[in-house]
Image (cartoon, rainbow, N blue to C red; front, side, top):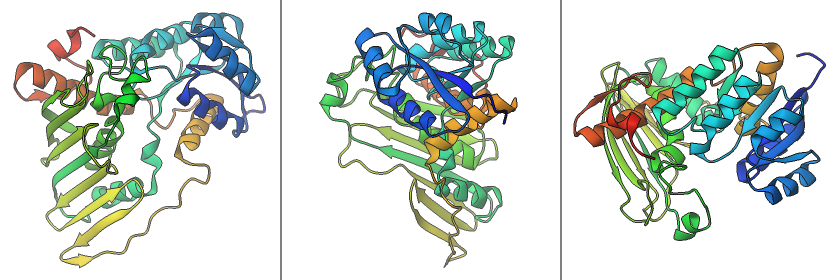
Length: 344
């Protein structure tokens, strides 16, 4: 890395913005030089807390602060305009997941950053969890034999206050629903471990909460390697359970949560588990550090757009499937019909 620190701004001064600011304070080679929020008081308070100038709106931040990079920590459906404007100003971007909630908006972001020659990275820090790295190694090394089934269960509970206390949780145009806000990490991990998904059949609805976006969804998957799988996602069940992934092969089974290996059996025998060491500062900070180093060194980040889109491609295909009532092929945000044009 060079001795010149990467000058970083933050757009979105609520919970995730605070997490990014705290991470940047612990990262050598990065300095927070400004923050922005659509609410002036929120931005002002954030700036006072973290010792940086504050702005109402990202345009003023980009125009006034000398930025090398920006962390986008706004609601899901507010990412596109910020990222496109950052690219136009030559600013590298680290975007919280998901990149966006419609195929066209994701395409706009990726195209703008590619055309401007700036870095675009997405936060998917759970790939750094030791259990998930272990699962990827086991499945990709063929220790379970030929993979035949893979599933992820995201069975959570959100009280009414979760939606009432937020201006965007549960909204169709800013949240997108359970697949985008709660389940994307699990979907990303499923395909990261088991391989690319070729087609999807899915359905979703608001079955418990009075919200505009689905709180429950179920997906059937066909993987390119031949295996089949499922995604179960909800914020409507009690009690909340940990994200749980299971991989079944012709020789054995591996079941993991984000913190534990619950089952690892091959040919009827329990197998030893050797997890990699956890990141000492946690996976979220580790990925933000990777982005800072990638910008400084001129190399690709841990999760570039092609990787960030894989889980989203599955979700967009599932939405198209629900609309059409048929299986839909997964492609890099290709022809998804109604899913790409739906009103948000």
